[in-house]
Length: 341
Image 1 (tube, rainbow, N blue to C red):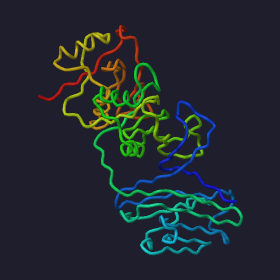
Image 2 (cartoon, one colour):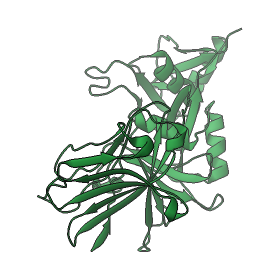
Image 3 (cartoon, rainbow, N blue to C red):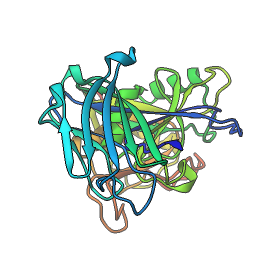
Image 4 (cartoon, helix red, strand yellow):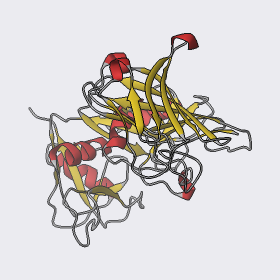
């Protein structure tokens, strides 16, 4: 029996129905791993059969770099029992991870552009074999900003692609690219709602696998629903805020404000009411920390916490979101943004 092992430690690509309209139609899975030049990378592979070590006599692990022409495939590593052998350019820099009895993941050290390509893991265990394939992409990804999820005041899953692009622009941001989202996932971004990206795909990053977010068996990863209908598909969006040239700040006021009063207070101070992108940039790139809920330009109320503490954000650094309250409620302060002269 041959089975495809679905361990998505990195990027899970799901080709199937739209997130907002699930169907019983089967979907396909691929795994893509991205590594920086010169770094070490782990290609995931695990034995399906429990309570059997892949390193026992009789069980064989074979890693192959797969070419378009199968006759040009390149052997990477072969393991049988305690005997292991690496080949060609992978000699002395390819190893089995062996974290537990089912782990046959491959570690490649000092990766180069030549390592880019498709890899196949085969665990041969009598009649019960495991086959797993993945793509490795090698190349540095640079981002000088922060990725954040955004949904409009009317609620989640209400943006088509054009609306998503505009929603980010309205918050002094751009719609995020896949590489930017992947880097944010590596830095710990975990968000269960699917959002548009610049290439027209809909994806979401999961660091803590759980039932309502694709299940626990798929593992951590950036999960994708592929390209969606840009006109009819309705999702949230992931925005990217770059470093800002101006100053983001809390405006000290003697009393709490309604939304319109907040807008005017910033104008009176020679500034504008801050946008969501301004807050995320200041929080992530400048370490801005304030435990006061304040209005932002989209009518939301938020506050940025860089130093977790009791009554503010006790467990993690985060932008805390209080929703979109009635704009006539005078219960909040305001965050302003002033461009440098």
